Image (cartoon, rainbow, N blue to C red):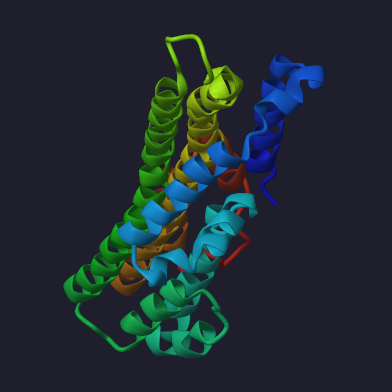
Length: 268
């Protein structure tokens, strides 16, 4: 589980509340302001995006809290294992092993080389899937970036509403209007606060965390593409391991490369 998103949200809220001070916290609760900012932002997002994306919002948020779904070192180990089998028994022997792979992209990539597809076709198809996946992820991330922009905008709308009501209620002749002045001013100012908080505490961090998860998955898929092409080409498993680990950070690479191959594991 990745607790950084939750930790960031909690710290941001605690620090803002601390800045307000507890005795004055009630001054920052205003129902009309919440309706304008939160309700307006949600309504605008509904107008901007189709239901197929909106219904997956809980899934997107859950993805922010999960740990890394795609670990490169175990994937490299699996690719090396498949490479050793392919060198000893041929590519057809990988069909049974492919059934043991639950992750769809890896599973389909192995089956493509088992079916003796042209290497250029394998690379083209897999890279096309990767591009399509990246486009879908960018579309989802864009929804939260849009929310990050809309929340302050509705905060400004609320500010205008409060100022208009305040000015309409003022009576320069000296009678009436003073009783509603404080309420109208609170709507004018608190909506801006709500909009900025909603944007910077929730929407923008979600968008950024989704970008991190997208980069992890893209690296995973790219590793698989290079790995299966290398298996199909009959490369030495040890060389495949060294080349693939070049895509992850040096510390993990050094640790894994230090592991000695057992006799006969190179497939030679």
